[in-house]
Image (spheres, rainbow, N blue to C red):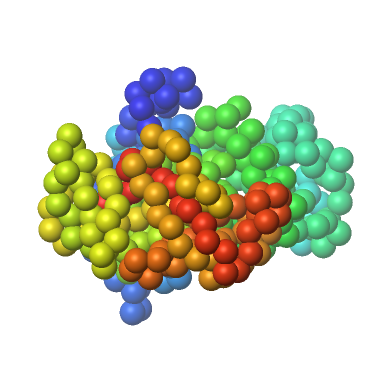
Length: 365
């Protein structure tokens, strides 16, 4: 995130710093993890099952003890501090509300433990509940609420304590699509209003595009890339990250200079152009949404134009994926197009089409 962007959001440096984080739990091992999260940042962690995402969050919260390494919060060493003194809130996907308490009492539970007066508890509970759209549910019990309402209550219970860092472990995963989108908007609004530093584990890429300032990719107990949404999604460091983030068009080729910072990449006889200084064997990635598909060859400034045959059309909801086999090499490209666009262009399997894309859309790694 840029310094200007951080200033606009009230973000300062070094809210949470993890240095040489190492831990062993059963068969799981993580060694020498290092991560810095800025104050006010919305950091999203992604990675396959078993990568260590939840263990990282729970260790930050104080549930697990480090083998080696330190954790600092606003410069203060909290590595050996009890969970209740860290000023960190955590919300899981399964809500963990007290079934014998009303929603209001659930939300106010932490304040009561701190000795806050009843009058102040009632005021603060109503305030945060209204922010999350559940002010009318304070007298109800958890078993009478929907999944989305329960998750709002769980988030309210954590946020009401004004944590220095809020940890969210797949909070939207158990919800239906409509509720997930609604709660995603609530999280964004809440973050913008409260500027709480948030670290959020997810496997929904919509969360990344809607919420993240920073994205962290984990694999087998290691952080393998950390950066802005654009850096991670459009400029992955490895083929694994390219595949995991849905780049889809990932090929191997040979790269040679083509002058003026341009490069020519040979993919089984097909030549495409990129902006790269790499030479020799490379991987190439192009996201499906970067490909423009047409029945006729386009006249444009884009350096690359590929002709091929439509071999498959897959319905993915709003967008459809169109697989095109390039006529020279047989390389299969995947483009994303709305159903309306496919219908208006009358594209079908067996049709000859052109794929047009800029050299800057080609990521070489």
